[in-house]
Length: 263
Image (cartoon, rainbow, N blue to C red; front, side, top):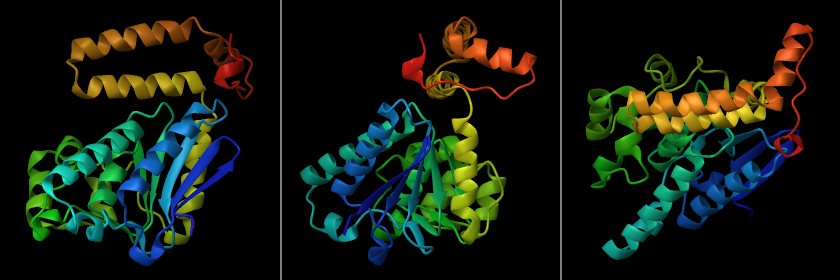
């Protein structure tokens, strides 16, 4: 069985974690394959958004494969954790938006994957959490760092120290997702609609916005503004903005070419 399904529809590539018998658990090779697939999609100038989801309605991903973890010593675990962090960081820094369509359980590494995405869209049956402390473990794929950045230190500490789960409504109110949860049967269609709307924007502008967000996450305000200034100036002088502004003034939809077609 293919553990990672890849499907393209226009400018949107959908990656589906396909291990429904184990709630789409993530082993090391699958993490690497997922990051590689995001990288390959982003390297194609025709790709303007990526969607990541899980097979079925029960789980986006229930996290790391515990059978794999249980057999590891400290040295091997260190290698695997670093590889997983690298994979999620590459997804987080992808030059095209990566939207997580969270269909059910997103626990441990599954929640960490959703946190590394540009943003998640949650179904009403989603359940998010970092339950590692109950197993004598701690999150290892960025959860201790990304969750407090997203919801604040105290909320993150409570979730990780108790293993409590977030329902999708609370996740929305905490700002973990930009829109209210949607019915499971509507999740992929809703996510595809959002991805297609992103795909209709200027691809160079989208990439610059993602870059500015990443730089500004850990930079001072002054350093972030300096990066923004340079990218905004280049955008103003570029061919993409000529099309966007021209379309606005002419009251017509903009038609942005793929990046490789720009001079």
